[in-house]
Amino acid sequence: MLMAYGHSGMADEAKALFASMAREYGVTPGIEHYGCLVDALARARRLREAEDTIRAMPMKPDAAIWG
Image (cartoon, rainbow, N blue to C red; front, top):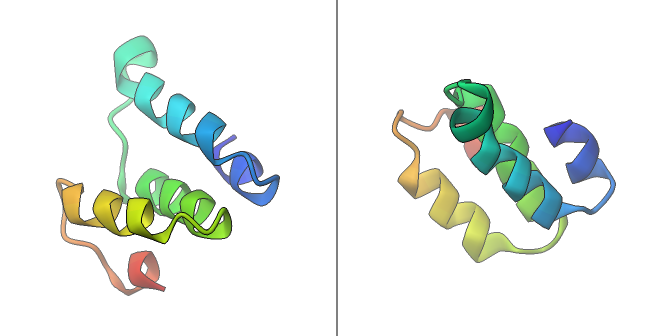
C-alpha cells in the first residue's frame, strides 16, 4: 500500500498509513517501510520531509534509502 500511494502521488495517504502501522496494526516499521515512505515523499517533491524522515529513522539508513 505504501508503494502504491507513492506511485500514485498520494504522499499524505502514505504518511497516514505509515503512522497507523504501529498504532493500529501493531506492525513495527522496518527499513523497507521507511524506504517506501521516503520514496512517496520524494516523488511528491517533498524532499525536506523525505530527508527529515531519513534522519528520524531508528535504524541507520542504507544506500537504498538515500537513493
